[in-house]
Length: 144
Image (cartoon, rainbow, N blue to C red; front, side, top):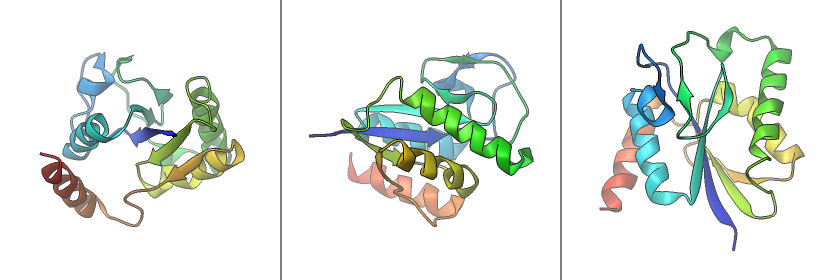
């Protein structure tokens, strides 16, 4: 049976000092996605515009960079780097990836996941931020 792996976006709200990924991002959406990932996935990773793939215990420095400022080519290179790094930790034959995050990220990550042979799902496809928060609240309350 394949293991479930969360691949989660980070967030805009951050601490102003270095901290591990799990503490560095402070938005409610990030906090809920992290809680959900801890309860529902065998393992999980994060991604951001600056560093690409992030491990949960990795320490980050404050930064101000958005993928929205990237050219199309930069987004493609970024996504390829994220998934190439992801391949160092996970094998397409052994996992199902649950991709969380905005369309601006997913539009470039999905083709890379497909190209590398990963099976993946997008649990909240088409939902706005408020709807995503409600989705997490519902899922988290069902698991209590």
